[in-house]
Length: 341
Ligand code: PLP
Ligand code: COI
Image 1 (tube, rainbow, N blue to C red):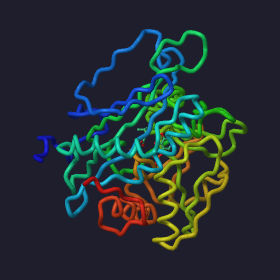
Image 2 (cartoon, rainbow, N blue to C red):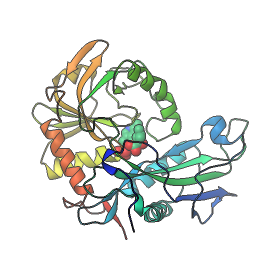
Image 3 (cartoon, rainbow, N blue to C red):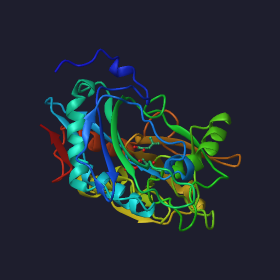
Image 4 (cartoon, helix red, strand yellow):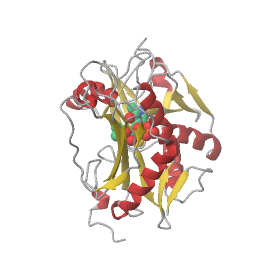
């Protein structure tokens, strides 16, 4: 396969149409066999469930070119499981795990010319999603659904790549107690749009959301979980029922403990502790680990000792080990890497 003529090293995090996308339709209680198609456009009723009541959920994962030239995806089984949880929470039918993984493999293979070459810093982002498609006017779940998966080559999520970010503590919440914060529902992201536009207008890169019940504890950002490093090199991540269980964060906690021999803690993290940490990072598929240099709490600046010029040393080790596993330079734990034959 000949690679597309794309300036891989200068890609941002945007949408570039690729050749094929996967689609499967759910009707009369069953998914059809699914197919790869060419048409990126979707036509639906003005009264479709997704348009009226936001019945939609999605996933995000990446395909990588390894140092020895294979194309691989990272832990797609966990994305399948999380999509299952999201679907159940939104009263949508489950798209089976084996079908999900098959769709990932087929769509990546069909778009292999768009998988960025090794060493460019870019990856192929995969966006699986589901939505209610038939007409719904009373508030209830749809009867017909579409599962889709498209791909787009991407570079770093934050402009400036690994440059430390400045974030603000938001006065808005992205999730409610006992709401949908722990699943990947489109509505959570709609909730966050005003907050992120406000933060950007004020010159911040991202928001830190607090726990919606007491607003005393750290939750996550609009698209990534937090990792903190204590001054004695412990890796700490917030525990909460209203944050998304990030696959990157779970993988990094394992890497910290099993590869780097660091102590790890998943626990409630209070706002009042922020002054004590040595490093802070945002972790997610899109964000990988993006270092945070400064957190602003209503004008009060909390400057992380790792500074505004580069990643802190522990964050860097975590970053190098995780991306090393994803790019085939560091041996992966059993089952983490799916090679696309
Ligand atoms: N938190 C939110 C709100 C997200 O949207 C994402 C992205 O998927 C994450 C965390 C990171 O999750 P993952 O590492 O599975 O991509
Ligand atoms: C991802 O990391 O896959 C996400 O869905 C986050 C989003 C902000 C792009």
